[in-house]
Image (cartoon, rainbow, N blue to C red; front, side):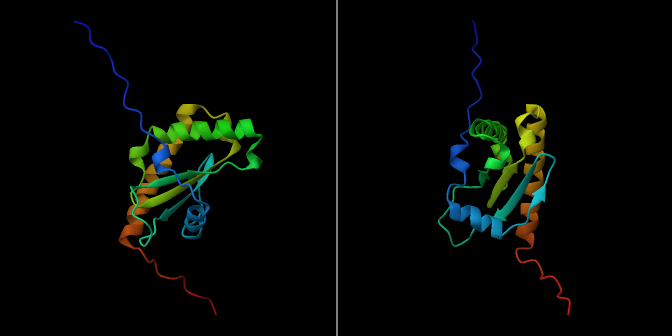
Amino acid sequence: MTTSLKPAPRQSFAGVRLRRHSDYQRAYAASRKRQSASMSWFLAPQPIDAEPLTGPRVGLTAGKVLGKAHERNRIKRRMKEALRRHLDLLPSGCDLILHPRRTVLTLDFRKLEAEVVRILQQATVEAARMKQNPNPPAAPQVP
C-alpha cells in the first residue's frame, strides 16, 4: 500500500489585499510609520462604519525608487510569497501596509520570511494594544 503525500492547501494572498487608494490613504492617516531592517510598515485599525470585511488586509507598495519594473515585480513576488506562508498571523481588524526596501531583492528568502513573521507578530501585539486603548490620550501641548 502506498500513500501519496498531498501538498499543503495553498492559501490565497488575493483575498486579503488592500486594493483601493482610499484604503491606503486612510491607513496612512490612522497610523504611524514603523521600521524594520529591510522595510517600513504601517498598521491601522479597520474603519467600523465601512462595509463588513472578511478579515485583516495587507497592502504592498513598490515605488520606482526601488528599481526598474522587473526588479519591483520580483520584490513584490518575494514579499507576497513570504506573506502568503503566514497569513494566519495577520492581526484581525487591522490593515497592514508594507514598504520594502531595495535590499529585499537580494536578501536570503529565509531571512525575509523571518522578518515578515517578526513584523506580523509585532503588528499583532500593537493591534491588541489598539483594541484595549482605542483613543490614546492626546499629547500635552507646549505653550
